[in-house]
Length: 248
Image 1 (cartoon, one colour):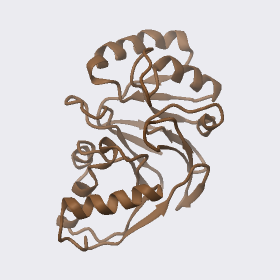
Image 2: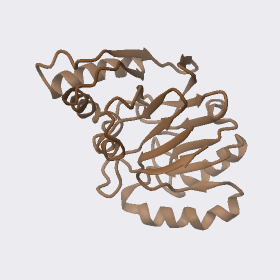
Image 3: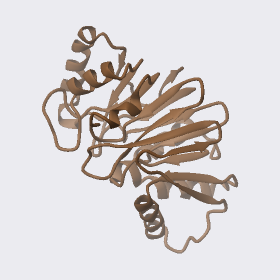
Image 4: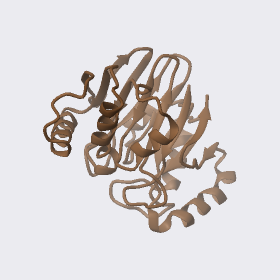
């Protein structure tokens, strides 16, 4: 598998696009979250408007969701024909349908089928060669972290929010975990700090930790403090830049 870090920023950062990634497996391309600035990163990466097979949305905040109308609209203009599957919670399915209707009122068909698969806490879904597992985090909105297993590698993505003692096990033995990291050590509701992610990654034997979604006002400071701490952690930690690639 290969990861494309489309965006690594938080909701309102003008320097870094919204937290979003592509997972390229042998038979399937999965996009993780679709904020308004993240979708533009996708088109910087590819002109193949049929590249994505499925889109996974972690939760109902705009920086993870509001790019969907632009995603579908561009696919419509470029005459995509391949089905698109959206995997999300039941509430998010309603949100996506309302959002797209409001954004482009009068468009009743995109020229391709949009299928929904409902994700739930603790549920497993088989999508092509990928086994997908979900776990609820402690975010301010209902957020489901995801584990992606193609039988060879395990890729995990947090969306937003800290895990509790049981649900963090979704990350166990991950080859790479893309996890939000709002601050270095100052607690903020619904988010995690770097020091807590380090300890969790050790407990769950995470092979590589990719940190992003730093609070914009402290972005440079937090990145610098994380870099300084890496040698002490004993972990492989990366701080990806937008459109950087990582191969497994």
